[in-house]
Amino acid sequence: MSGELDRRLSALARAVELGDGRLEAGRIERARDVVGQAGKRLGLGVEATVVALAGPTGAGKSTLFNALSGSELARAGRRRPTTSEATAAVWGEGGDALLDWLEIRRRYRVADGDLDGLILLDLPDFDSVETAHRLEVERIIGLTDLVVWVVDPQKYADAAWHERYLRPLASHRETMLAALNGADLLTPAAFEACRLDLRRLLREDGLGEIPILGISALRGEGLDALRQELSKRVRARGAAVARLAADVTSAAGSLGAECGEGSPGRLRATDRERLLASLGEAASVPTVVRAVAVAHRRRGALATGWPYLRWLRRLRPDPLRRLRLSDRPDPAVHTSLPGPTAVHRSQVAAATRRLAAALAHELPPPWPGLARSAATAAEDKVADRLDQAVGGADLHVHPPLWWRVGGLLQRLLATVVFAGILWLIGLAVLDFLHLEDAVPLPELGSLPLPTVLLAGGVLAGLLLAFLAGGVNRISAQRRARAAARSLRARVEEVADDLVIGPLERELEVYEQLCEQLELAAGRERRGWGRLRRA
Image (cartoon, rainbow, N blue to C red; front, side, top):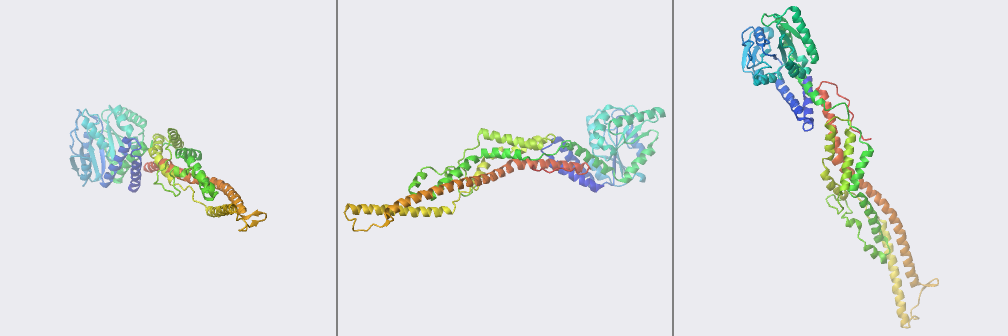
């Protein structure tokens, strides 16, 4: 039984840890107190059973205390207040450590073997005019293993008793008894009517099953039945565990109100895509993709274009260099891309909140708000992370091998053209000096070879540049698509790190918290559905 309680306490302690800073501070603090008090109480052992006699002024608590102990240990009377501080009667040896923990100074030993292990407390009146007395009663009631409520026919229906003490302790029905004192003051029929009416009131308080013992503390009537009930509880040595289990159940139930019956929703593809699209716009991904395509065509033209026209391409700057984007991924480099505009930030915020709302809309408060806060907690980091993501993306702009071959062919053709030009210039000089017959002029077919070199080289170079340009345009689109995929993967990392990850972790805390509260309450673990992506 203690092992089961240990597991429930561990579950409650874990729930307190998870709920700290998330759930109402007062409830968390009360649950933390339960864990701490239970640990101390179990550390003191369960061999002794602490029973408190509590009740209103003049109900006969001290008289009953004396009757059970067999000595005049407490001063009895009907004036207000009679008992100013708690008094303890200890049956058997030991109990000092428990009484030190309970802060009970007045202690007496009782030699009665039938009740060995019982520590009986006579408490001040819970309706005392002294505030300190009422606070002392509430403190000790919160620590004792069993409470015997002593009331009389005049005060058993007192609203303060029912509303302030009984109803809040409805989950502690196993740790309470009711002793209706005054059987000597009424006829048996009248006294039975009072007992039945008390049963009705207790049933309305949620305590209809607790035992009600009719007694006369003054004459000793009904005390044997009370002694038997106390002896049974003491011998069972389970009152302390039952009380602590009730405390754990109550604390778990209080925190469990924040769980409800809902469960986190699915991460829908449409919501995720909306978030990624807004982050992509904020990161200027379309601009970078276009720059990759333009840069590839430009670099391809410089590598494989007609050498005598390449200078025209050099008049236009490289778009990737202008954006300070390196050919090699480097997250440490700050790009010159414009930061997210107000519109972009608004779109990201809207997509983030919509995503959080979709996952947490079935959950009770405060979880929708906590989910939204988790998803938006890193809003101020989004711009820098997106810039790093773009800088660290592989844009697939490395030159292909065929550019070298194409460039070599173009240089060869340019050399042929240049040779043809020099040859023709030489022929012109010889013609000017009237020495054209001194040097033979080779022909290819009917055309002079220098002319063939010049015209053929130019035509072949332009044709090669045209064909290479077509291939480069196709390749540029392919490179742009590859860069878009790489950029998307990097943007997804940002989304997972700054938005989706924190949101899912917060919802996992909700699931873990509710699971622990189910275990702490002594119920079977609920079949929570883990977060899934639709």
